Structure formats: structure tokens, C-alpha cells
Length: 551
Image 1 (tube, rainbow, N blue to C red):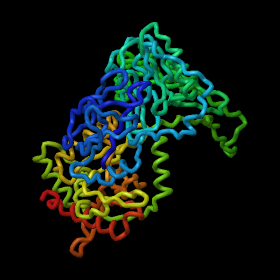
Image 2: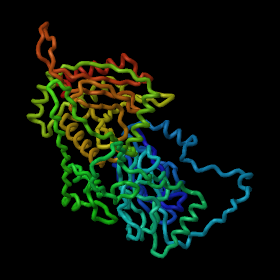
Image 3: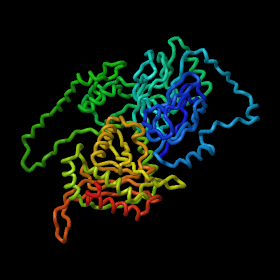
Image 4: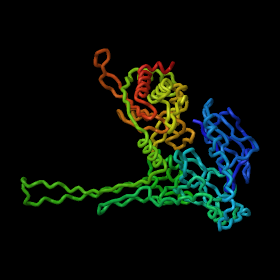
């Protein structure tokens, strides 16, 4: 799906940028992180980085021409994609156009009472929250990598930012000293909100901040929430003493380096029990390596009371009193969890779902997989075979490879499969692009790489966008069958259960067999029952005769 690239705000005083040089031309392939062009702002010439992957389909402004903030610079999409309607939208009043000139009556209106503050002599720059994904509205500062007083150079990482899709590094575009941090770790900052101020040591940053506030030019950052990540509530009269808890975090958020978090997760170490020795109590690698878990106190056993001498065999037996405690924990929602809740609730409420379930005979697929893995450079899983069969079935049933866009239905001619991956605090859906054109071994390697990135929270925005169909596989957990909620804007999601050994009828006789249940959830606004059934029929035929996937 084509994405419009707009002029970002690269400095606090920038109102437009001038394209100094295009480094890419129409038809070039673009990867996330590639430099599209050099842009002259009011302060410096900076590189414009792409957050999208695809082909550069359109350039909206020539070299040496100026573009206002949020004006259209280019369009990136799939090679050969028709962007006529998108260009027409832009030409007919899209956000690319400059703001209309004020009417004479408005121009004659008196200026606000507050006087403009002259900040031209202040050698400092406000750093604002950039838009890091197409759906991002705010970012949460997960960790500050730099502290107030630190020297910062262009390209240094200031902080790690949680968006609605991933945790990403916030890079500095300025040189100087970090003079001010607007929001502590755990705080949310809206797009274009103030994050920090960088400048010379003696710069009057307070005056710069006051001038910005008086102009009301940018939304303010939210303070970090004063909520502990885990709140214990106990109604028992007495309980065992709680182990020491790390309190180095601001607003209840544990400060730890990404490497320390990974090592702790691998070793099963609870970071709340680790004392950090890094800057401001931050937990670092050596803290995890030197950590020794505290032994839990042994329960105190009370001696049973002696039975009275007068007790007889006929006396009722008294059951020992069981002492316990009622408890719970409350964990604040992560940014990802809130986004998942919002999108799936919207999908379930707005998309009329229906479900189609089918049994697949997997005997031939089991034999084929064994033969494939004898020669494949990468171990092919049943999930890889499901992805391949899905992609080829979509190629033969393109009306299922569709999306609902309100007043129109988009029938995608390319096949991008979203594969749901469970991670610690939610669910992400990395996208395998052009899955129908890839071999089983290629799919196996790519799916494994994307799953690893997902679990390490290293997926880029471009790796989670553009899916035209989604697969959710819980078979490895022993789930026989289940239903899923459609992942918009896709019209369908395939729920895949485990392979189960069951009696089956073949040639009139009951014999042992291996069966896998799949359930297709469809948005009835886009895909009717007959279309969904036709797709499942093709999918079944491909898995029951795997040689067809290799032709």
C-alpha cells in the first residue's frame, strides 16, 4: 500500500524545508533508513530519512523548491502500484497544500496581548517528539540514555521511545549539552511535544521554554504516571516479609539497559529484585551477572495440639484450619496493550464477523515436510507450509485478499502475509511480503528472523505494515481449534490449530490419521461465505497435496 512521505519538522523554528538534493529518483528501491534527500532548514542542511520500504513512485517537489511542514514530498509503494487516485487526492486539497492565507478581516484582527519573546540570541534548540510510525499519536519515554549535563553530538541516542508498534531509538540532530529533560522515563509525549533542550552550557533555556509556552506552539508532554508496575493487595492479617524491591526507577518504572533486560529475561531474573549500580541506579549487565537470588524463607510449621486424654474413637475428626491469604496484582497497561485493546475492540464492534471451519488431512504434509527437511538449508516447519499454502490460495482467490475502506473495497494484487507473534506484553504482526513468490526454505528463514526480532522488540515499522491477510497459529500450544478477531484493514484472519492423531475414514475403512483444524474469520462487508469457502477449499487441496506448492 502506497505511503505519502511528508516534510517533517526538523527544528523548533522551522516552518518549511528546501530540497537541496534528491539522493533517490523515481523507480529506485528504498529501504527503511535510506536517505531520500538533503533538506535545508532555517538552521542547517539535514538528511531526510525514510521510514518506509518500497519503490519511490512519485516526487512531489523538485530540487531547490520549498515545502511547508507536513507538505507532500514523495510517495513510496509497491512497484507498478497505481497511485493516480492518491495523487488526485493530494492535488484536490490534501494536507500537502500550504495553509490558506488569512482573510482580510482576520488579518486586521488585533494581535494577542502577549508579546513575542525574542529568542534569536539563545544558543539552544528544543527537541520534539517525531512521528515514528504512520499510526503513532504519542511516544512513551522508556529509558533516557543521556542525562542532563551530558555532551551530545549529532547521531547520539538520546532515549528509547515506545510507540504503538515498537521500541525505537531517538536520535539527536543537534550538538551541545543536554540542558533540560521535559519528561522523565515512563512519561508520554504527543507528536511534536517537547522532549528536551540541547544547546550551549550558558544558554538561557528557561527563556526559550517560556517563549515556546507563551506561543502555545506545541502540546505539552504528560508527566510519568505515578503508578507502580505491580500493586500487591493483601487481606490477610499477617504475611511473609516481602523481598527488597529495586526502587531506582522514576514513577515506578525499572531502569535497566536493553542488554541487562535481555540477559535477565534469558536467566529468568526478576529485575525488581536487582540493585542497579549504573547511572542513577540503572541496572546494567554486571548487575545481572553478579545477582544472587534470595532464598525464600521456609514456612514455619506449627506443632499439632495434643489430643485430649478423654478423646474416644467415636469422636468427630477435626479438620486442620487452612491459613492463606487473598491477594492480587495490578499491572498498568503498556502502550502496546492499550493499542491492541483499542484496535481489536473497534474491529469486533464494526466488522460483522463470521467463521468457517475445516479439517485438513495432514498425512501427506507430514511426509512431504520430512523429505523437504532432508535437503532444505533451513528447517521448514508446519507453520511455514501453512504460510505458503495461504499465499498460493490467496493468489487463486484474490477477492479474499482484500480490505474494507469505508466507501470502497481494495482488492490487493500483491500477497503480504501477517504472522501473529506473541511477545511478553502483547501481540505483534510482522509481515512476510510477496509470500507467494518465496520458496518454503526462504519463508522458513524469514518467519524465524521476524519472530526473533519481535521477541527482542527490534521490529521496524516497515516490518509490521502492509499485510493483506493474517495468520494466527496456536497449534504449538496444543490448541485444537479457536477463532480470531479480524486484524483491520485486512478482511480475513486464519486461525490454525494443532495436528491431532485421530481415527479417519479412508476408502471405506477406519484408519489412523492426522488432522489439523483451521478456522477462517471473515469481515462480511468484504468477503461473502462462498468466497471464504472457495479460499479454504484451495488451501485444503494445497496442504493435502503438498507437491502442488512446489510447482
